[in-house]
Length: 369
Ligand SMILES: Cc1cc2nc3c(=O)[nH]c(=O)nc-3n(C[C@H](O)[C@H](O)[C@H](O)COP(=O)(O)O)c2cc1C
Figure 1 (cartoon, rainbow, N blue to C red):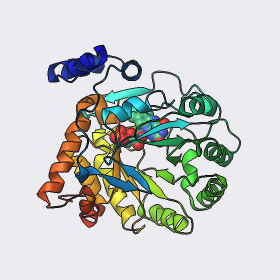
Figure 2: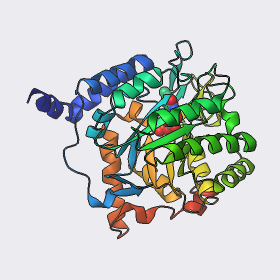
Figure 3: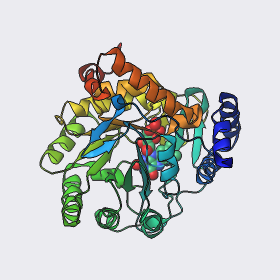
Figure 4: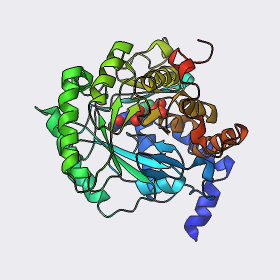
């Protein structure tokens, strides 16, 4: 009763913009901690109306109420997947989780690039490790599809073994797994995207998956900082495997889109609005190379229009994170309403009819390129 009153209060636009303004005044990592705490305490508005059938999405055998997911990195330790599902995300990806707990890089390590609505992070896979995260997920009914994003410890002497351990640990509790080989904040990790290394990684990860009792879909999350030859290489390697899908993309080490702005010189990966066009171009270029392999599009979605553009570029489902820092959680509702309206306008009974409708244009760089 009290919770539902608080929830109704929190849904009021004035309260939403007030809490957003308060969070934006805080140091970014403190603000993130406050958001997680609010979710843990149930102090965030729940979804009121069920998603319309037009948003229902099939992804690798998963039945999603809508195609909008929470990207990895927000809930690294699986503290609030259920609360995120209650807010209306169609799927929630927790992690990155590494076998052993690790502290990540020294603070400060998270920066806003305010005027551009960008975020730079060099968190460095701070997380509580497999055991703690598994303990939270065992027996948990999330209410939306649950992804577990797995990675490697910074000081590991065998990165591939860390991913294999992640598959073994989380296959029994996850609806899908993501092998994240694209964080710029663990030295050497992105080398796993190169031909031979990727072949070995996928060979071992997918062999471990095959040993699990239930077949869990495995996605590979790649960087946007890859040229077309590198995309060719990745496409050729995955064509010879039974990988289930790609997540495109992680953050960029490029700074062209924020040159000269405050914090642009900080080391780490850039996300949010300034990542949108690069990540969407890479997504479309990969769509041209992988046929109808499922792709989750992520990077810079900050409005209903950019969410729709990701789908049109070739994504079967989408994720977001950084824009929630600037737009607040009501952005999720606005995106879902916008997607349902776009399906109606196109005369389609489901949003999936628009997937890939503008891949060629985005592969060349998007509208106006
Ligand atoms: C603070 C922060 C931490 C992140 N941590 C992870 C992570 O642990 N694993 C991962 O795969 N991606 C991580 N990401 C990347 C996001 O999942 C996403 O790919 C990227 O931010 C682009 O989406 P966005 O522009 O909507 O934020 C992180 C992003 C941010 C901003």
